[in-house]
Length: 250
Image (cartoon, rainbow, N blue to C red; front, side, top):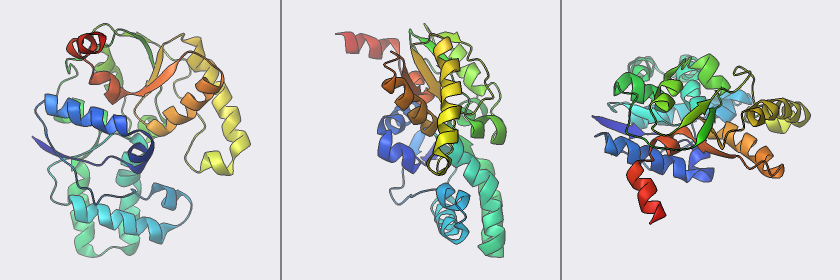
């Protein structure tokens, strides 16, 4: 199987280790990875801020780059939701008829990371080993827009050595929301405080999620409180194996 990686600019700038983990894991599972260095932002920031023509330019670029792709894998719930939910309206407003048809054909081949593993590769067991206590945070886009359901839990349940602890109030937003955290800082901080109480109550070593924007928000708060808990994208957990742990220890 061949898949194109859309890394998302947030990961590219702040969390390059997530992209490396996705590539390593998918290659281990026999997937041939293509990476187009011409990729840019998905346009979500522009669209959510009311700059629809600017968002359209990013959407049109995405279509040009990936219209022939067998699969597009995205390790970001928010970017995947932007493409699948907001691109059709952008193309309806600014695109040609042929572009609308191309987008309709492409969208079923666009998958969030956990969707690709479960729905396209058909296996929850990716050979991972991670002997730590872990809590999973369901991002709003993954929970409400993509409706990922139990896919992340299926993957975590198959990780050898991992103790998965339930995070209370799963449906509660962390308060980041991209530009929302900038434009509504006080509300965002209040939401973060409530979410942090849930996260800390698990006494987990690691808080994981499928969107690094949430993890940056949570991770910053954990760091400021010297909480002794770290954050990791799910891909960084799934790429670990007993061999990699042994090599790190030697």
